[in-house]
Image (cartoon, rainbow, N blue to C red; front, side):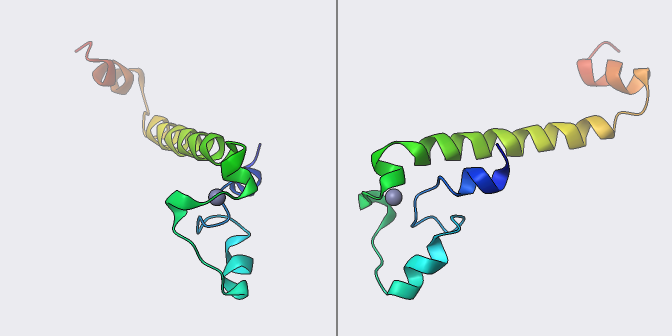
Length: 81
Ligand SMILES: [Zn+2]
């Protein structure tokens, strides 16, 4: 699932949701904690937030791994030295 597809499953009151701007245009706005949109009601928001967090952590890990240039760098990261 792509980050964009995940964002489509976020609460409509989450600024990362592609539906957020549509909601603002209606003039209706509620506090996020009290929302009963379909995504919150069915638990999709929590799953989407969890998956987005995991994708961010994975991207950070991949970025860190790109900075490892040699086996000695890897040994140093593992604490073998
Ligand atoms: Zn919601």
